[in-house]
Image 1: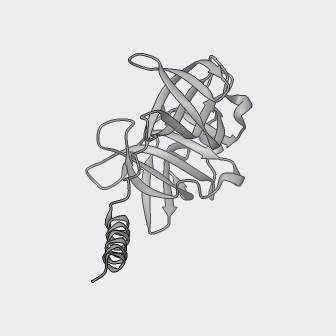
Image 2 (image 1 turned 45 degrees about the vertical axis):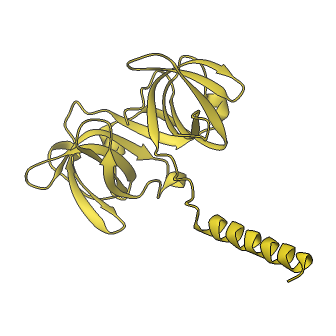
Length: 207
């Protein structure tokens, strides 16, 4: 075998190994969503400082395609049949849910987060986003919420906050506003927000 033939064979082997390793190397797992709840202390371009309810201020960078929504105080009567809502709730022994908060979405936001899944507002609570079917009970405080693949019956206690959620823009991200930032850590560990709910007129986004 000539030296040129050996070199060619080694080159082919190196290329083969490189392709194999490239194909079999595991992809970097997507970072989990971390919700940062608190008050906006400062805004510097795409960098936002949020003072959480507990602990030291957190630096958050706005993602390139960050989506912003606003939260304003609403009433239980704003929940109508076929409204699209989201509610964090606590499971009850009879299979129903007791709401911790209710967000009524603007019609243009229908379908946001549709489903029933774990949430982190309190221990062992859930989030249910879907369309309101039946309303019953005193002042319509027992509601049926239908989402893709299921349905839940939810009771809304009188002391539970109700807010309206509507589309906003980055101009709503201002110091002093209460906020919930939905973030993921980038490769360097920086919290990057791809969605933010900003309270207006002193409203605290309860989710």
